[in-house]
Length: 173
Image (cartoon, rainbow, N blue to C red; front, side, top):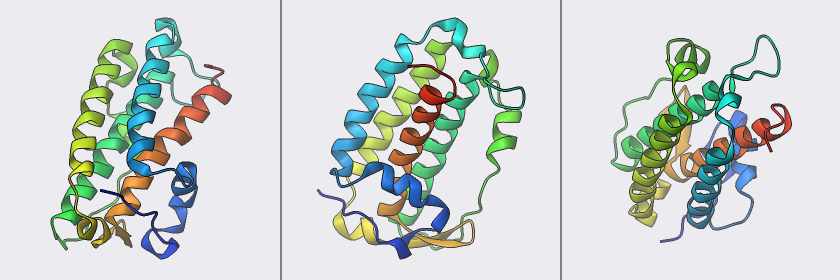
């Protein structure tokens, strides 16, 4: 099954950068390849880098990875709900509070990798088994209308965005 790139009216403007991160690559291939590369990247990071922050008011590396995990889970939940025809509006979330009330900073790198790997594997199964029709279903989230396929692209683009931050701002190449 091929999931077409969403049109600009299928997601809130805030998410345009995430959608553009995927480019014109087939999104299922992109997500699958991204999984393998990102997990390999995380495995190569030194354990002591998990507590590094590049600026006083920024998250430590482990919290960035945890934020990626939380957002992956939330985007998949939105994909599930909307692809199943659920028209109940889905509220937004405050990523700062999610990290604040998490235990990411005290978790091991291995634990974070296991969670991301399991979650991404599960999400790939969900996404790969959507029908073309389901990928075009729309619903409301955080006060805006989104298509299922937009959330698929956002899920992939969000990881790419924060991976770039880890490399550039955290210096974790």
